[in-house]
Length: 219
Image 1 (cartoon, helix red, strand yellow):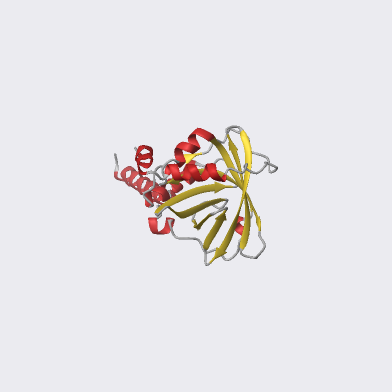
Image 2 (cartoon, helix red, strand yellow; image 1 turned 90 degrees about the vertical axis):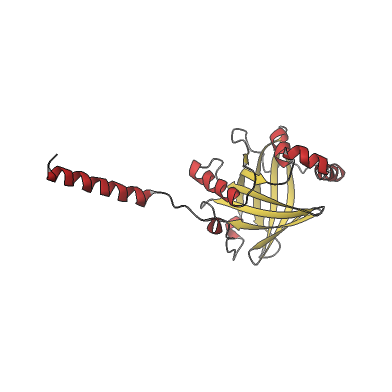
């Protein structure tokens, strides 16, 4: 190979390397991925959101979801004050549709969520433009649990978008995500409320907090 040909090859290789480096995806640090978003208004959350995936360190939630829950979507509407939201959750549970109402209040980038007798806090984390990632921490019987939830205006996300969510899960050292089905039709917005089963749900929560049960579910 002559000197001129060798020069051409070298130049081509250099340009190809520069091109690859410019198009390679940016690898965000955990600090960037877990930095709460600044929320000056409730407007970005208003609308209908499909529940895409979740990760939690609370035993039993994944098993319960895999066995009974097909899909979930949320409808956020303005609440009574400028910093509050009415949140209506629609759940397809064993081929039946139900809904549940809760209230979200925003204060200094932190959402306080009231759901019957349960109260917990959440922040929003970086994600795609039409997605929402919430990190929720709750205390139950002295145990603190972390939930990471991914919602979107779409029902299906790209591999790259899911990969970023997986990276956030890794940063928090949570279990791998589990996803909701996208094949099943979503519940209508006229879904009836869950039946009054406060005693049943409380018994279920108490059961999941038994040490032996938690060890079995974590195994």
